[in-house]
Length: 249
Ligand SMILES: O=C[C@H](O)COP(=O)(O)O
Image (cartoon, rainbow, N blue to C red):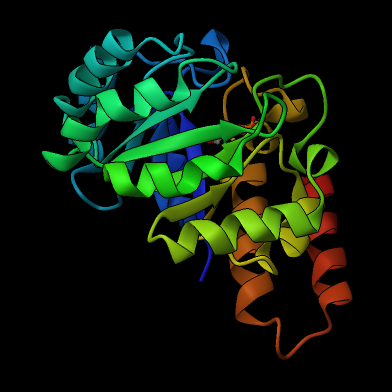
């Protein structure tokens, strides 16, 4: 089963995605970048509000690949009570040093998800190192939200091999990056643990706007229905139904 991760900025937005059936509540400030961080007080407030009904993740911000900076940000974010801390692997340098620096935190029990970017020197050879260091998961996202979605950067074979390789080494796997309704069926067939959304849940696909309840519900239903009924109904029909629901939302 593939779940739905929904990025939210507040308890009000968390309410919407919980009601729609999202599986992971992801705390993020889209106005601050691909992995923009929310203020600590806001994270605390939403963690308290969700109160264990679903796992909560939070991003640490679009930070440079500097070991001490990432260590500090991961510790601070984890201390707010989230279930997963998402760390972006931006740029090219410093990746191995950062994995090593985060290893003690992962081994102490902080569940860290590495976010690799399809549009920033994507490097799947990091997967075994992440697993060895005790990371909890690895996902792919896009760093630049104006240069196309995930599937314009990576073809199905590359995405499938990422998911298979990450699962083989025991990592939770996620796919995101300006995903839209039309991406759901092709990505579900790859079998990641979750698909992540922000822009598609907002009015006009604008990820810095607030969530649009009709879009949240259309995307959530598409993720659930396309996999629940994929053996009973032709994929084409499901795809058309989901796209129709989404465009009228
Ligand atoms: O973690 C998932 C992201 O928040 C996806 O954001 P996006 O759909 O706007 O690319």
